[in-house]
Image 1 (cartoon, rainbow, N blue to C red):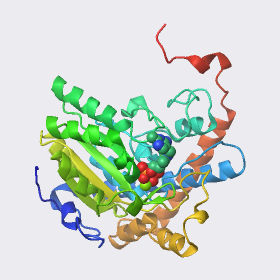
Image 2: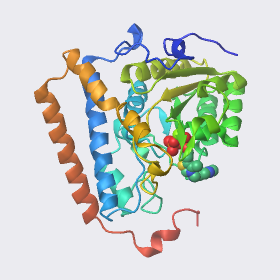
Image 3: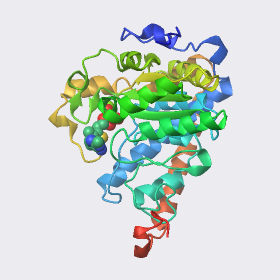
Image 4: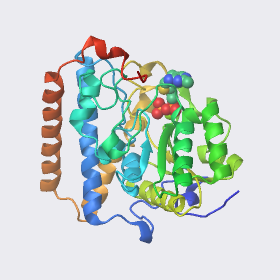
Length: 348
Ligand SMILES: Cc1ncc(C[n+]2csc(CCOP(=O)(O)OP(=O)(O)O)c2C)c(N)n1
Ligand SMILES: [Mg+2]
C-alpha cells in the first residue's frame, strides 16, 4: 500500500475535530479565497433553502439537499483547478457545482425541467448536475455509477499525457456498491490521477453507517486497493481544503489516487420525498443541526478579521438577489417541446 502521512490522515482513527482553522502552510487558501469560499457556501445554502420551499409549494417536483455538506464541497472545489480539472459529482454537490461556476439560473432550469437546462435539457431529475463549461460531467441516478466513469476518465487523461485531475464525489453508502470496488481496484493498479471524495453523512437514506459497513472509517477501505485513504472533518473548510489540495497535487504529480473521506452532516431528510422523523429521533436531529458548518466557518472568518457584519449582510443580500433572479428566469423559461423527449440520446 502506498502510505503517505498527511495532516488529514492524522485524524484517521478519531472523531475529534482536527486543526480547526489551520490548513497546512503550503496549502492555505488566501484571505480573498476564504471570503469567496464563504460566499459560495451562503449562495448554495440560500438556493438550497429556496428549493425546499419551492417543493413544498408544489412548484418543483423534487429536491435533494447539500445542507451540511457545504464546507467539505467548497474545500474540495477550491483545491481543484476550477474549470480545468474534471468533476463527476453526485446529487448532493450543490455548493461544489456553484463553486466551479455553474450558474444558479442553469441549476433552477433543471429543478423546473425547463428548456435550456444544461444538465439534461429538462429530461433528468433535478440535482443531476452537468455543466460542460466547468468540466462537470453528467450524473446517473443509480448510486455509484460515476465511479467507473471517473476512473475511465482519469485513465484517458493519463494515456493522453494530460495534467487534468478527475475528482468524483459519492456518499458513504455508495462505497458498498460493486462499482466502487471495480473503480478503486482499477485506480490502484493504474495509479490514476483521481480523487474519490466520500461525503460521509452516516446515512444511506434511512440506513445508518453501522449497518452499511463493518469498518470504522470509509477511508479504511483504501488499503484494499493500494491507494491513500484519508479521513477529515468535512464540517471544517480548512481541513477539507488542505486534504483535498494534497490529494489533488499528488494525483497531478503522478502519485495516484486518494480516497478522501470528508465527515459531514446530513442536516435535512434524504430528499424532499423522505420523512426522516421515521428513523431519526428529535434529539439526534437537533444534534446534527448543531453541527452546521456555515455558522462555524463564519465565526472562524470573523475571528480572523476577514469578515465584518457589513460584509456578511452584503453577501446575504447578493445571494438572495441571485436566487430571486434565477427563480424568475427559470419560471419564465419555456418547457422543452414534447418531440425533444427522445433526443439527443442516440446518434441518427
Ligand atoms: C443502485 C442504486 N440503489 C439504490 C438507489 C436508491 N438510492 C438513492 S440515494 C441512496 C442512498 C445513498 O446513500 P449515500 O451513498 O450515503 O449518499 P447520501 O444520499 O447519504 O449522500 C439510495 C439507496 C439508487 N439510486 N441506485
Ligand atoms: Mg450517506
